[in-house]
Image 1 (spheres, rainbow, N blue to C red):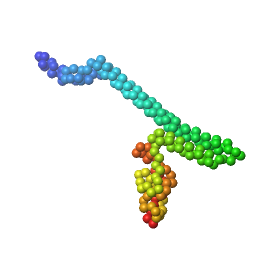
Image 2 (cartoon, rainbow, N blue to C red):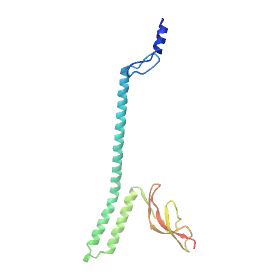
Image 3 (cartoon, one colour):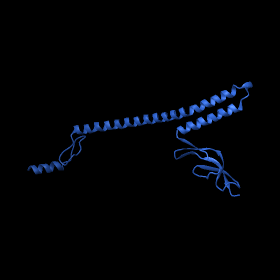
Image 4 (spheres, rainbow, N blue to C red):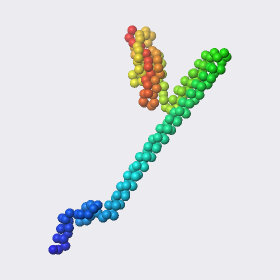
Length: 179
């Protein structure tokens, strides 16, 4: 037998040994390489788990930051409401001054609208005569109006709101119909 015959027999013989893999036609993977690959795999799994935990923490912190920002924009509206209640309760003979109460309520409404605007929320408040837009308006009634063309807003019953292109709530309107 020559060296070529021995090499052929070695290549044809099945590889044995725990943890060894075939790395080529004539050799097996050493146990030290297998251990190194195992350690690398465990490190990669640990890194993936740490990344998942960091992402969860970031998501939680982002949510808390968003809620905090929104609350800080709305709190002035609550302050205005408290002031309106206090002003109404301090008037003579416990009779509320309707003018001061109305002023307080208007200030509260402005504070809420301003706070929502700072958060990117836009109010949808169609005016009389504006074209009905089914993407932004919800027609809950229609009535005949000689002064207004068909399909135009006659009255806004409830304002709508949107954030960017996302509709939070459509404005509820009454539209004109053919009379």
